[in-house]
Image (tube, rainbow, N blue to C red; front, top):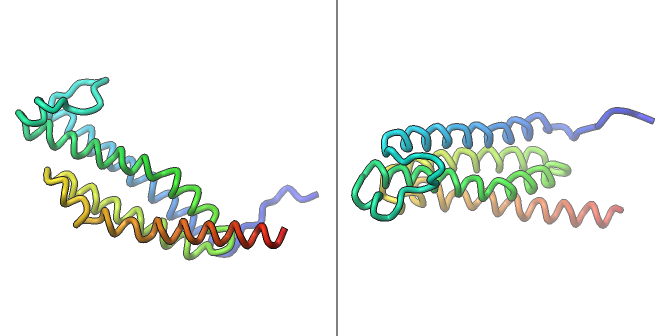
Length: 150
């Protein structure tokens, strides 16, 4: 009985791509904290209230940063599961798509934190759906192949 796990060639790239998602989340958390401090919004308040955001650009920017971070967290289960599943058969595809998604999240955050939420889409939002969709298809096809081979 072997105690080792054999990973497909290219798995190191998958690991690196997954680590890039951690850096995106940490970076976004720093951006949120910076905007929280500038806005004066205290914990545990998750967002500035509508009146606060209308009265203060700093509070509005805090909401934008917080929403960009939250949206990324909402996507993480999809990215993690589909990247790992796709990587079983197609590690380079999985790594490339995951890393590209991370890059688009940076663009998304930069666009969102301009204070104009529409710029989240022109700066990475829509673009980030392409690798996500690819990972969903890749993971579905990989699961199909594994079931067929079982």
